[in-house]
Length: 167
Image (tube, rainbow, N blue to C red; front, side):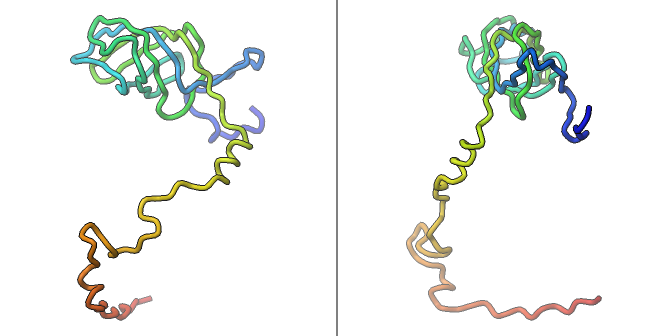
């Protein structure tokens, strides 16, 4: 590979022909069968997804059922936690975490479109939202509305002389 540094490559990456028009995705749908789970699986559940060379934590966004137990089958929308991945429809997947095990197939890919330079620039130039605590000084009008006792009396802490430093 020319002009590619080792730091730009990580485990799980694949080489794909440009003719296939590869697209990465953050989210995908899959039909899964829960082989074993001690309690119930519901939305926001996170587990490790193994799909081909991919090994990454994914979170369940929504399901066709309210909750899943051992032996249940459902359509599930997954979202990768760390970064988007290259998937294809029809790929087999294993979903596991601790003693939880589920298998299934990727049924639909939701393509990720990264923001354009113009969109990024517009986002940076827009006015940032005001942070909590802006335009307020410390020890002024707290929950009781009174300033700190030291500030009322006008007292200040004595200056501490610098300690001698040995070279």
